[in-house]
Image (cartoon, rainbow, N blue to C red):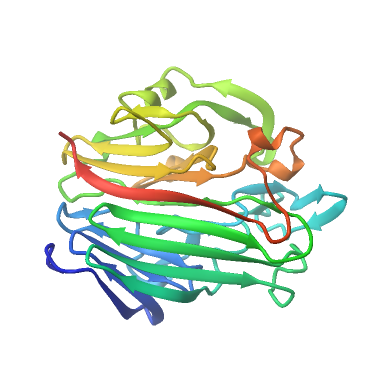
Length: 338
């Protein structure tokens, strides 16, 4: 698409699945509603940046968590899939059998509905929703009724995502939300993975013990991790499967919560900004098998939050009374390093 063209939304197909393509000229995105509402592709055509890891075929889509921006509800692990909230016992399926945990929730593989398509002179916007009720296949594990909405807005300023969770049931609902965002490394054909450096809004990490679950110990950053707050850590130099707590860094003279990847060989900067509800970041890069991606995953709650005896202001537990809602945003854009 020409980089000076007007915003446009097109219904299309992605390997036989209905999809929605958003174009603004500079940016282009592709959403696959029936694949968990995943925004599977994001590009900046002007800067020739292929931002998100996208499968080359449907057969390659073997792990829904390592392509695009999968929705995690709730995010990450719950020990044995069990917890008690307000005297109600919950048992989620154990789908990470090697560790005995429930992993990543129920929405990443559900079929979402397109509610709205809006085009203005400067942007295009698609709103998706998923309605959870007594007929939902996971109601037996999570007996709450709710609506979750995702608004994807694409403009010259990049991708702005807004999520909203509305409790439509009759009981207070515990909630946690996150994204398993998977960025290409490098994200430009002139880039070099060795020259991609990650900055992250953190001042420490949570110690993970048996089952990759938090022990409760809050650790500081080690010597090389301290570079997260200034020059950045090489994305592929260290194996990451690490859980960090949020602490804003300064970016463009403002407090910033998020991740910044600078590719010095391409002269480009990828910025991933998150709202303040996202109190925790999981960083994953494939560990010893790492090759071409890194996942800075914004999460509202600490791993295994329902089983952790800490205040909600620390863990990030969202408690929604009937009729109440929660909402926050993330934003992704690419710019030249000046």
